[in-house]
Amino acid sequence: MGIKIITFNIRYDKPDPGNYRWEVRKNAVASLIYEYAPDIIGTQEVKVNQLLDLQKLLPNYYSLGGDRRGTGDDEHCAIFYKKDRLNCLDHGDFWLSETPNVPASITSSWGNHLPRIASWARFNIVEDNRQIVIINTHLDYDSKKAR
Figure 1: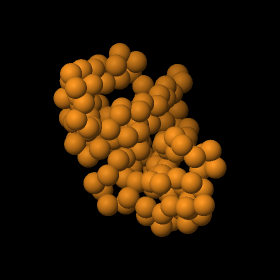
Figure 2 (figure 1 turned 60 degrees about the horizontal axis):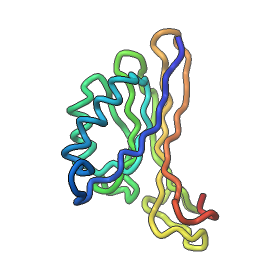
Figure 3 (figure 1 turned 90 degrees about the horizontal axis):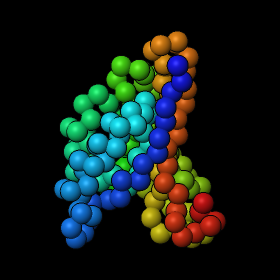
């Protein structure tokens, strides 16, 4: 059996009107995930409160990955994975800059104004003992050079 992987920009929580508010969207996000039943989800623009909500709404998944500033309280590129299908062997983060090991690093000549992070994980697939590596990121929307 294969591994189903999706990517999902859940859009950061900000004061939106009506159905765009996170309090309204969070249940729809969880329902969509349950409908498609992915084994791995690469998420983008996940604020801490959204991460906590998703962890509660998706009890069959573990999550990992840091935030773009390396402080734990900014936007995450979290990776969610099914507890019963995968074991995480190793994971980490790096920044999309000339100094990838420096949290929140930006290479200003690339034209991006915010730090960009990539979260990665190496998994063992329980079913057949194969290993896979997943890298999840959110590229800069404005700077071609940064992308």
